[in-house]
Length: 292
Image (tube, rainbow, N blue to C red; front, side):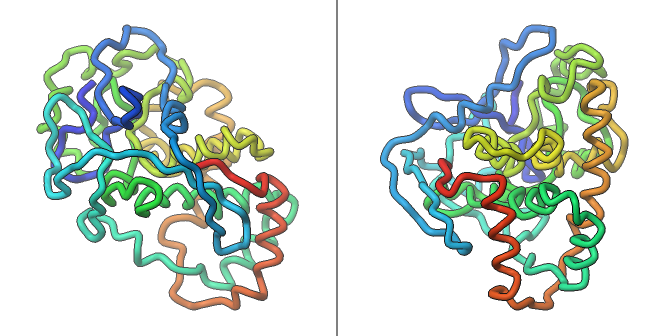
């Protein structure tokens, strides 16, 4: 599939590994059947390791990798290949995530009380945004449009509910008959875990959590992985690809969304006061040292 052929909206990317260089490229040889996402390859592109300390005092092991040069002003790609970039395009996308800050104290407290026995859901909120470290120089410095934004399935018809749908006319997948059917290369009810999604911080943080042996239940990982899949949980598209487990997990995603996008506030909180609570939850579900 030609996964990176549009002007700038979101991302149409999955990850492969070629000659030790991280590439986000098309999958033109996918068989017409349920396929398993191979995005786990992302975590295999590593070389030298060094340590950072995150804001909560956790030891975070960041692993450097070689990246290829890329013109940050070019948003149309031939052959569906995107080399991980050294250039960060802050402010270039349609959604500015830099504007986000700590959430209003009353909202945090309301959420905590409502879900007092569901601490993993609270951790999910904190951790799901960590995938945006891909914007940072130490993590590849991908341009903002390649990290944030709505995600959607590849290998089947692009639903009209996808943000900036009109730009898909620049994507050569539009000319592929198979990719423009309802099921595309998938079987109905195959399950979202077998669907290749456009690349973003969602899948990255899902892979980080999974590969580091998090004790979060699968429902929480589902929320992390699909919280930007708005065509599904906001517009009801692509439900024909879901299996029974997906149908159960999306109930948790719908609850989670009440406290996600557009629920932030510029009102600052006392970080030192709430830090012990957040830290205790993170330590409950994640090891102290993380491989990124």
